Length: 243
Image (cartoon, rainbow, N blue to C red; front, side, top):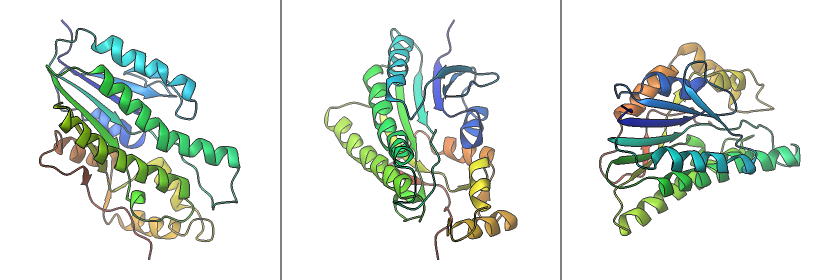
């Protein structure tokens, strides 16, 4: 007998994604990691955010897995990102392009693939993990901030489109707040002239004020699901804000 819940999480091998995978609240759920690195325990499917040719395999997997699905729910949490850092005109052009493709275009295409594969006789939900960078200009992260803003607008628009078409799938973007991950710790080591937010992040990590572990953040996110009300963007705490 198959699981009555399927959860896909991109980037489930570290940081927030690992926390989300470890805290799935549904008993006997089938949890699938999507990303470059295989998970040591979970079923994993390889793809690369920076290589659009690899994305079709994810769409095929969604369709094949959900064809004839008789369970209760199917959820996709897109969490994976590609980290880039540098001021505009000062970074490698190819890397700058790849970062926006990974963080701005890939979520939209993967989301469309998931929404195209699900049916309406079971609960279906799509979560986009976003960032305060969608509304706050973090210097050194121009491509990242633009990508997250694009993802949030996509969520707002898609929610309205699905409602107009009478589809019950819930779609939401979540800003997780300040999560203590390898990437945030790496950025916190950077000098202010390279990344103005770095020193403030270091101070906040040292004080632990407003900082969550990946498991704490993940539990908070799961507690928000399925989303209640009409909000397209859900907030869990605050990321550091430039002063």
